[in-house]
Image (cartoon, rainbow over all chains, first blue to last red; front, side):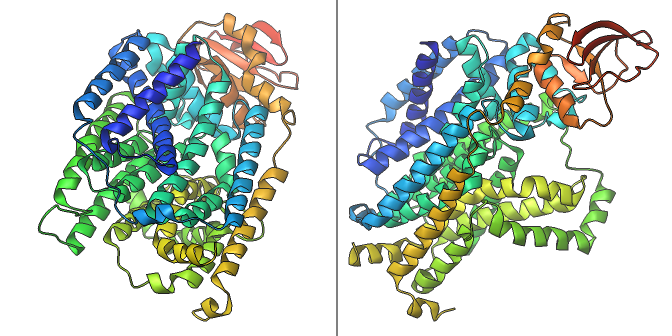
Length: 466
Length: 132
């Protein structure tokens, strides 16, 4: 009963957060799916934030905090609900497009296979797979939950291998549900892993359906659900898939509408990415730089319809900054320093070594075709193939918003590249055990941008060949 | 490559894409392990070996750890996971030290470590007489 109440409260909190930005205008199936996926993700994130703040402040009545947050959000929503109506930008007419029937069948087959595999894996490995699930994420959840007033013991420099500097979205969410339940159970981590996996796929498909048409939505969903490593990693109870959700959510909000509410949600999603993993902080930096570059390249005189304008950035920062302050507080006052940055001379020496660039470049090339653990035909290769078939016409159409998002992802990948160059660990060991996961973090977003780009051409096929 | 778009119809291209994806979906299903296939791993992570030991340890603080040098760090990580919120330092320089020797008899312990209690299955509670 307690877990059901907590789950409903979590979802309702997420729904209010999302509704504050989205307004009330979404009504069709895709919009409902989009809202549901976003609500689940933001609800889980809200639970992590309230748990962390309760721990920091020493407040022990978690239910009261949850209800107070819900009441505040509900009050805010009731105040603004009549002010905002949604007008989704992009190609609204695509919503009328019906995709080929066989494509729907293929999508459902991939969804069924992914669901089946993920549930069996979660049941077979309730404590997760791989070392990071128990050595980092669930260990931190245990310290938060079991530690009581001494919860900060878990961020001890005596156990640097547990990466005590990693942000707490996932551990704090798990600990929140354990606290509500009154006992630990591995089912919480397993279910949260499953939820993030499938809401990412749902968000991708629903956003593509709204912005680019049904064919793009089905193809995008198919590409993600048919990436075995994405599904596997989702059940491992790592934070990479939750981070991929927040990166994708950021880009989706930036493409859906130019309203202040949407920009605020984009900023919040980016901030929550930073609260999920350190790589999320890198994504925030990449996002801000990409918006700055886009604004320089496409200057506008007013904010009307401006996707990368000054005022929309203000709304983005309005929600981003508080979350970054929380991350900063955690990093400054609770977590010990991270392990990736050594002294400046050592890092400069590594940066001056051309062999390291070559090593990382080769791994990037190799991993590009195998990070999803695909069979026979890597999906990135299939996407290149699709681009040559469909992309000829779209090549000339410049879309500043799409370019800015692609730049953000490109800069994030470049940031990963830089970290590998300066890593204090053996570079091959580090690449071997992390690069595929880093690619998974941006994979749903890369699929989103790709099918957004090809959307108009794909819709033409759907119209001609139902 | 620009000629590719003339050689293959767009519908065929979509078919190739979807089939390529479904091949990987099939792999995902085929590679899915059975529910009970990795029971040992689940048991290790559940930390049942350390349940009795936990009752003999303080509720918080730092304890030491000693294990076989041949064992990988995974054994040590699992002990930390089982005993949180205690911090388990991979060092014997603490008043309380946990010995972890799964599947083998404990090797000769350092002289300063005295056995307090043997919990069986390679789990030892040790006291360091030289600890500050």
